[in-house]
Image (cartoon, rainbow, N blue to C red):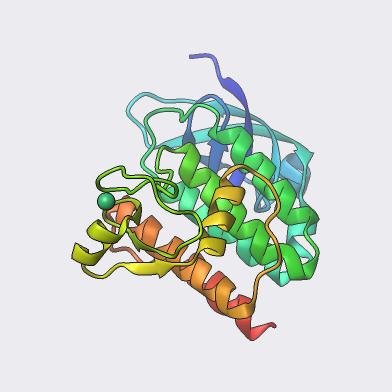
Length: 253
Ligand SMILES: [Zn+2]
């Protein structure tokens, strides 16, 4: 079987046995793939910066039928993304993005997700320290929306009645978004989302820049995102990188 050459981003990497590394790649043409880079730790020459997190380039993947782990022939790096490792806010935001991308169950290749993730890493990499939280939140909401989980913000997620954009609205993770007053009154365990918070999520999904927000608003956005993701992922597994990002943003401030 001829190898597949496809653009890829390293989302996760760990050492394997004495000399090798295993990477989890988001590929443009074959979804997420786990690949073994044989001898990668013995010779930096062969794979170079391709073994580092968030690196992007053309991967040559040798597939074997009925195997979970494929073999990496080469990964020619076009972008090493060293800038993501230069700031703790950038690094933790990018790690959170990797984690949520890896947690989604993909149907073969989720068309277009590669471009969204690429753009998201570039945006985080270019963010000044005080903007990394914003870039992480924006990237995460865009990815979630791209995968088909856009939250309802302008109409009630339950009865589809239009919502008054100037009033706070209840937000229900299980219903999938904001609720009208009637549905909100009947919902258990929902949060109240003020108009600026709804505007921010709408703006992030559109890929635009959000007006500066306070520490309290930032925390609330991170919590809302985590709860929304966990609800729709349907998994109880802890989001470790997300926790580090959530806690780190405030201990560093
Ligand atoms: Zn309603």
